[in-house]
Length: 145
Image (tube, rainbow, N blue to C red):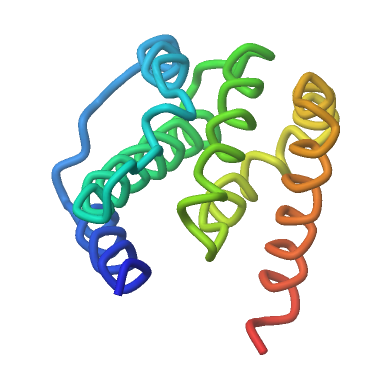
């Protein structure tokens, strides 16, 4: 049930036509504001709040990647570090690891810089993100199934 509500929220958010124009600096600040505490649910009724926060985080990742890959601004190491950090935060609440799929275009474009940014993560998180990106890349190349 929790996964279904998360997926429904993701579809709603990602299909939203009204995208807010932002700069990489603004999105970096938004990414920096996220923490693991945002995804802690002490009570069952808080699952909805965790789902909404995860969806918000994923939307911020998507907006940042879109701007970084299609925009004229150069993506900084700080932005890449924040993207990696927030992606790992979402993994616990989102078993589909959607953040890796969202990061993939930027990862392919800025592989060397992104690998360097991922090295700032704790080793467990670094490995988790690398594995998720590798799986997302394989799925992108070969299809799902």
